[in-house]
Image 1 (spheres, rainbow, N blue to C red):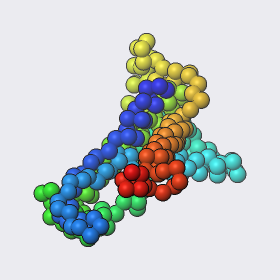
Image 2: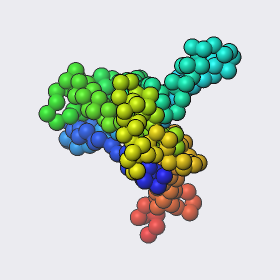
Image 3: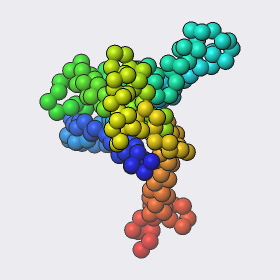
Length: 246
């Protein structure tokens, strides 16, 4: 759990800084020359939302099965049990699909490119407008792919250690692979799991660590604001110049 927590912190803090230049910026009444900045893009923009959506979709057949005893529904419920290959494949696919779907909703690359153009900013080597939007989209595709795979690994590791992976249900090679694993002492835990009890699963760890990191960031922001208030403010609540204090 400590290793998974460290991995979550590493990926949640990971960002891709896209460099940007501002041709001219108005500061007060003065026009400031070119300035360099960056546009931060998080590796995991979607957060824990894809995992929650995927788990909710897969829980629907289990909920429906409580209203009846139809044979086909019980079969589907068995397929969607923890450790079954059908469940694991659907879980991975849904996490990846919802990750791309959520990122496409919350981040509009064309709109960001248009806002940069209106602010007089541009990415070095990329023409403003449509080219900038396409460039940001290509970066988002790579970042979302890495973020989705990271979510899959974080959610599957505790689940595989608890319930294992039912290799005997794999088509064509399931039975032979199961007999092969049973004869290998170091791999006999794969179909049944290690029997560990986790108080925090993958989804719970993502939520707990994410909330803790957001809380720390907000506390640091408040401390910085208080520090500047104490530095700039005076006892009477008004700033004093040199003539006033001399």
